[in-house]
Length: 130
Image (tube, rainbow, N blue to C red; front, side, top):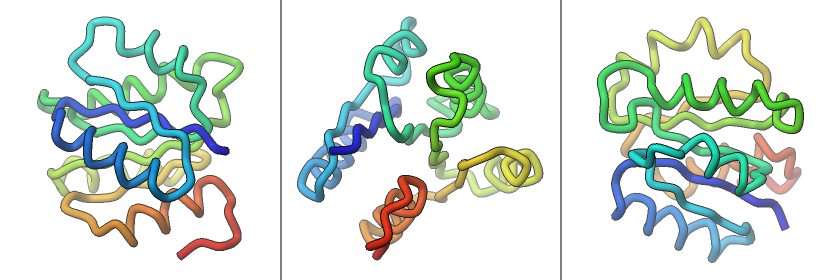
């Protein structure tokens, strides 16, 4: 079973994502993005896919910066990443950089369960993508 780690600063969003992913077929770990040790928590969770909020409650692309730090670890240099965010302008500004990155996609909020699962399945290489 694939392990998915979700990082966000909204507890309700984390609960919802956990329920969606766990009920679908994944082992989901949720992490509060406001934790001081967020990077260590992500690495310890040993994800097969990282879903992270691009902003994490601050201006800019803090979540993307954390995702890049995760990928600096040899064990996670090819980790698929799904960046989510309510600010389409931030996601659009990152698009040129994301296009050069391997196995990174973005998903603006709000999104449907079907949109989420289609991206998750594609990033994990599941042929039964919805």
